[in-house]
Every structure is written in structure tokens, then in C-alpha cells.
Image (tube, rainbow, N blue to C red; front, side, top):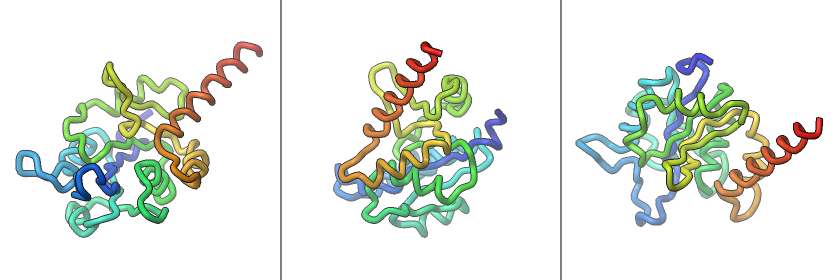
Amino acid sequence: MNLMTTITGVVLAGGKARRMGGVDKGLLELNGKPLWQHVADALMTQLSHVVVNANRHQEIYQVSGLKVIEDSLADYPGPLAGMLSVMQQEAGEWFLFCPCDTPYIPHDLAARLTHQRKDAPVVWVHDGERDHPTIALVNRAIEPLLLNICKQENAGLWHLCVWLAVMRLISAIVKRHL
């Protein structure tokens, strides 16, 4: 897989930031540059196509020249909605999602996740202590699952993680009995 051309990089900046009092986290500065720009810059060193998922202050994000994609679901229900919206509007097969408040992503994140994914449709970062499912390499094949989960009330990212774990378990059981 040619990482530069087969994976679309996505900066997830579409949240409401409720825990931060509604402040647009992506626009907070670190070393004189907005957080989201650190993430976009890191992705652009690894991938040839990068977009931003943002629901507020879109004009600020657009100044970068990157395509800005708004959630297709009302009320910005969370990162799953951002992931789904990007998949609905972009043509790629693989997407590397990174939240706007992760300015120190590794320079080889795309390569690492691609290496780890094997045949999985999704692989996300684990830092040795906990999962970070919003930093994830995701295949378009799960778009229908994302849509289904997003339609459920109070559904979130962990619902997707559970579904994917169940699907892998079922697949492993089926393979053992073939």
C-alpha cells in the first residue's frame, strides 16, 4: 500500500468541547500555532491528501487551504459523526483520523498503523495503558456500521469498538471451524 496516496488524513476538530467550556480546542495555540495545524502538518508529512472535519469557525480552518468538512448529522454528536461525514464526502478507501488536540503524533504514524492492521478494517492507537480510538486508521468498509451506530441514541465511539471486537471474534471462530 502506498501510504502517501491511498490514505486520506483527517484532523477531527468538529466537537463541542463540552469539557473545555465550549472552547474550540483546535484553535488553542501551542508554540505560536493552533493545535489543529500541528496535527495537519504532521499528517501532511506522511500523506498527500489531508482534510479537516470542523463544525465551528470553518473560515479559520479554511485559511490553510485544506478542505473543511462539516458533520452531516445534526448537533455534532461526536467523533463518529465526523468520521462518517468525511467518509461520505471523500473518495478514499483508507482514512487516518487524528483529533485536533494531539499535536505530537509520530512522524510515522500512518506506517505504524498500516503495519499493525493486518486484515482488520480498523486499527487504533494504544499507548501501553489505554486505547485512543480517535487516532485510528479506518477502512471505508465500516461506513455502514458507522452510520448505524450514529443513528442510535447516545451511541459513541466505544460502541464502534465493541462492534469491531465482536466482528473479529466471530470471524476468528468461523475461520477455526472451516
